Length: 114
Length: 115
Image (cartoon, rainbow over all chains, first blue to last red; front, side):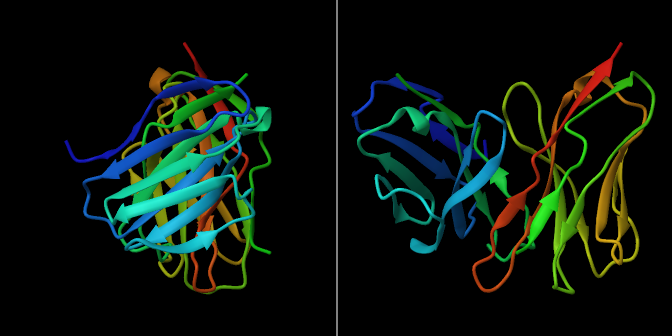
């Protein structure tokens, strides 16, 4: 199936740990994103990559580090997890990244930090 | 700053009736795109409809249509013949500009369709 897939679906961990979320798209899109959805359902962009190049880096703690080994993959590594990092993290992709083509989202990863 | 505002945090509608969700935005751009996304309880984000600002005709996708008022910077979503499966959060989204386009989302409207 063509889609944006991210793993894991759920992630429960303790404060101070390091964790990664993986994302892959087989839609042939050039641009990939990480969005964070907080407990109030507000969605905010964190990072955007176009053909492996970082093009958007919002005000995100440097404990968050995206990595794009190729244009089909965008992973998110989080160091020294804090309670406030608990959220749903969405990976997404789009054809051009110009705002003309819609985002295709993964199913989200619910991160719970205890 | 470019913003997207959804003024209705929650709405409810009876099955088979019509409901309209509002969205306003602020931009100085002339050509842009606007999107409505749906997030059902399953958490998946699903594109509902897209409107191109330079097109005067309102976009329609089956039971979903928009009322796009460019001068008023308004982009409302109309759902006709509401179905139980329409129960979801609905987000209006708008890309910023300036060379690093990113989609900015409104805070969402929680729609409940009652049987």
